[in-house]
Image (cartoon, rainbow, N blue to C red; front, side, top):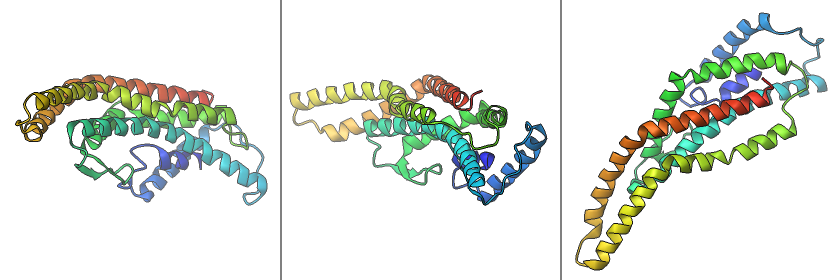
Length: 239
């Protein structure tokens, strides 16, 4: 239950394109590998008793929380992509995000694809699985689970979704804001200038150029946010 709950909430495996059978097979396979490595198990508990129900809730909560923290990191990337798309004038250009199934601007989807590739190249999914397996030693199977202080830590850390997204998009948004101010001054100085027909292509091309130039820095910032997310997971799992 702990491992399968993690696959339900973790990025990359929780998207609709990944069938539920794949997540189930992976959960069972990892469970069979982990079982010989587990510490001594508690005495057998009746599955449909109150204690068994609470133990199941505890395992599901641990797995869901571990994957949810990484979802917050990817939500910051989506927020940054939406801010960049609105600044570039591409807010009307949307596509379906396979991660959430919602309509998101195309720049947000571009950033999501880039960060997903970074996540896979850094073996982020394997690191999370390893941390979850190690958590069976620090949080043995039982009623003991993540406490209320840990839940408050997650709520406080969730502000990184907006702060991190703003940090990722700030160079592009600030640059395009200055360009729009310049166009506003030009429109006041020359009212006969068709500012919409001139400004939109320039803003779009400049936005694409800025995305290309800031992509390495964005990748580094995303890696830093990902590291902070893993640190928080380690604290919650007592690793």
